[in-house]
Length: 529
Image (tube, rainbow, N blue to C red; front, side, top):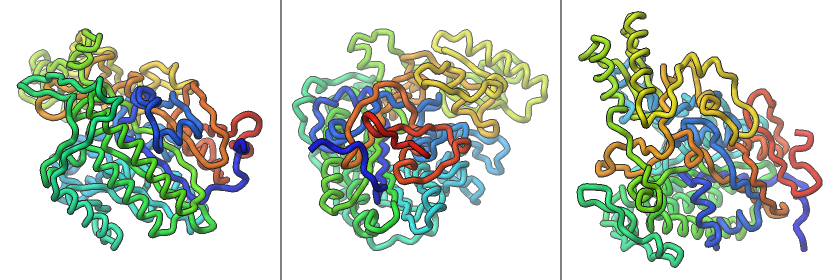
């Protein structure tokens, strides 16, 4: 029989999945090969293939902060993975998005994980405020993913570390987590031969040189015993996180009571794979194939348990393949960023021009994004540093735009289809007057902001371009008639859409998103919300 327009009752469990760096390009490239969980979501679900992380700062923490808050980074306060507070009362002025920098003896690298920087409630937080019996759980491969989707009032928040899944400071390890961590330790202690190459990946299987005799593109995730770095950047990580999620659902009985519960799941391996190997090699192809299979097994377990659940799957941002492979595949204009655009090089150049050499004038997290000026500068010195920095950056052939803090602050919050926004509107969607920099540096398309690929990451994201902004947004619930809407929507639309499914009122002025009608044809799942 044909599916009905919409189930009459609210689902008992919301499953919100974020696949880190699962771009709309990756989603569409492998769509015809899906046979597991991704096939269910695309063939039997509601598909928005042109979802947008609409802001300019397309990084992990800002992206995850939008998914279950209904708000852009300008409202969540999560403007980047790392920003700078030059007035911070510690030597390290970098602030990690998911830390509490007021904790003594900490730094942005050795931090105490915390949700303190998130300025708005998550969907789980709103559900719990409306009905305290609601259970809210968040699990992920990264702390910032679990924290930004779960929020400060989640009942349980867990993320993967080299020692297993951990939570906030002083949170005891319950028996279930101890059991999963024992399984993790056993697996990590054993070597792994890696994964077979699926047929659709054969054409991707060729080496790409990245310098110093190194190549990527032909990996199978073979791993020596104890190698957490490879475990993390492989399908093994997502499989473990999904197994943890399934165990938590079963042990806590999520979705088995009168109220609606919610679990958010951050699957982080696709991002680590993209950074380490790029998005277009055999490694990424294997990862997406395994992700599809693992999601299929996870959904099958929920079906077996008889849970009435609704799923949303999206990503925190997209990604861009490494320029070396792009150049081999018809894109000779692809480049790596000029080292002259790094904050250290900018400080030296601007210092020489302004007579302020020898001082650290400019702080930043890399050769793009927010830049901060030394707060000890006099007004005249600061004006000279800003003018020279703007002149230097705007003259550089790899720079698309540089906006001042005043220019961004004066711009109204963006509205209308996200695919039509200007760069300034995207920048405004990422802007927080307390945390954003004095300047925002945006590189031209097809410039990878990694100077040397042999020292770690080979590819990345974070740009204002569609490769990094566009992500799939997929909804599924048994009984909903499937349809596809190819026009642009935003990840901030997810919260009001799910809230409408469960009858949770959300004041329109408190969020940036809009409810998406999930009923094909007549009827409106947003009606009266």
